Length: 619
Image 1 (cartoon, one colour):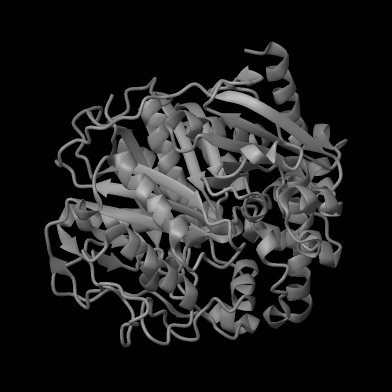
Image 2: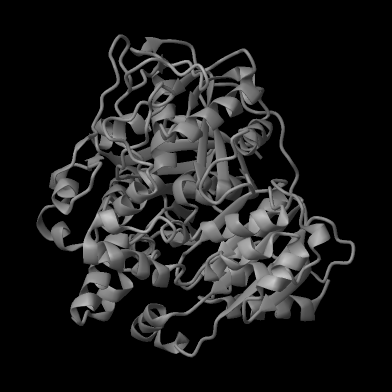
């Protein structure tokens, strides 16, 4: 079986435009096009740093004006992709559908939060639209309605690395034969909730972003969507290959929940894993699509990672966020598509941003695009929670990779649950300072309590996948209440990081030394159980020798209201967390894990039931 995934169709929306305009091929001799502007809406709302990049306004006109902004972006790209595939699809293909997002239906959530402040009632459909998984669920429904057999589906909420992860999972599914066609990508929309959060963290720029340059002061937010149709190399059926995705790697810093590991070690490990997976050396990758947020610490960290990966053979670096803004959950896929476009055109793209290059954050940037010979490129992504992900993208017609790792059986080693948080136990088991443990958010502390019930001697170096039902919707409302009451200047920087569902994985990674791959899932009724499926997928593929699969729920007033309105059968729920250790070593295992388990469940209790079932069946 081939080791590479062939991209036979793409669809994208970015602030530069839609379709081919979203990711224009770089033209030799031209500078980078920049879509970032002072945003009138953010100015009206009182933002101090209102620079942003919006998708084309006409996309949201007509009936779309009354639909969640993120859902409009996603569905428009999905239908463009499916229309393009209509002549290729024969029917009967097993489809894998995997998306990444940072905030899901947050624009609808903003409306829900506002309605609750005013005491207004909303219909159940409007309440459901406010969840992280609503746009994904609607896209999956429409995919099935067009006659596609969806054999596997998953939504990752791994913050700014989410769609890089999605492409990596798609590669894993194709290699294993779980799907014949994978539709992978990501989406996110720009709204005041997210903009308030990044501004209060002082991560946004007072002007235009200037990555890797002296005086850089942050990023500008953007929005968009991007989807890629992937098949196994050789299954193109006459379609031209745009590019190959040949390697995926992921890691966790386990250093800080929002700031990067300043050594660059975590991001470097992800890049090294992707190169190993693709069976090519770093010298073959002469172009890097950088994460490049233009914040002081990120760019310095990323420069160290590049030195670790490439040594003195510095590749050309493309900081695409300086052109279209930080599109969050869509960033990984849009930046990968831009990398693929550059490789296809054999033109190294120019870098946006003005000013002197920072000698402490060196990067090889081009003022104008240049014709070059590019065989392969590396995409790097980083995210809240210290999550890192990387992809290797290769030119169509390049020699196929020769190495292929054999799939391994996966075993359930142990599992534990917690009904209430216990900071003292977490501190004792993790050897972490009790005062620091006690100050973490409620979801992270409850999750850490469950993990403390495992043999922590087996956890060091493992990865973690956290499955969510309603994720962080209660703390989201709490964070946004201050913004609604007093404007974005009142946003609380301590409250914003825990609004990311991926933060919980990163927090427990710090406690227990989990430096392997980390990600979070919010797919709706499948979210909780999918954590063990993805964890097992990574162990089977050799991405990690051991993974923690977990699910956690803390039900506040709003989440119980959403359950009662949207999932009335789930309304009698309790707080709790479940954590399981899945491994490649069968010694002392409780059971073997099926990679394609079909059971579904919204809360941690569904994961607990599945683990108890597995243990009862045994080996």
